[in-house]
Image: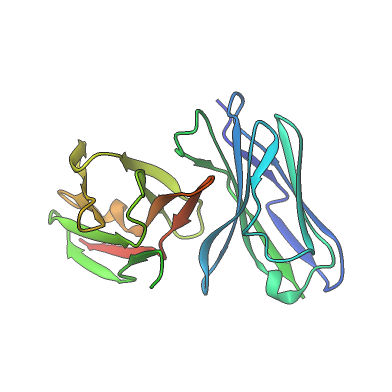
Length: 113
Length: 112
């Protein structure tokens, strides 16, 4: 079985540019989570979806961040405009049945210069 | 007080010993608890979950939950160098909607 797929794996961009991160959850999973991980702040939940509907976006740092899930097999996390403090590893995870057992993708390492 | 706390470590144990990792949480209503292992440069990997007070064993891993004292621990028996990683505790906070909070992680080093 394919696990959670994220793209790109690495992204280097300049401040002010738009960044789009992509995620394909495990087939059949009805929960999708976006996280950000930094040394200073650890692993932070940004937003999660259930059946493509955003449930909790209280972790989204500000209006520059937006996330969508147009269908059960695809989600995006967009940052516009990007800033150096957005540099982090962004993980997507999926799960099923509301058990909160989550399976993480490989992550996208974002560097904003 | 932070919602989920862990000793950052590093915790060093000799090969073959028992490694004990602890996690405390502030929300008394929390019902679900998870342990994830994260190797350097990799993504977190679920290794254990526990919902009820007491112990839950899976191979060399034992999760212990004490809701009255608000702590959950992970014991790794017969520690191996391959167990060297950061261990993240995750707690589900139950409000109007559920929310997961991860602890900062404990770095474990198993010395051959």
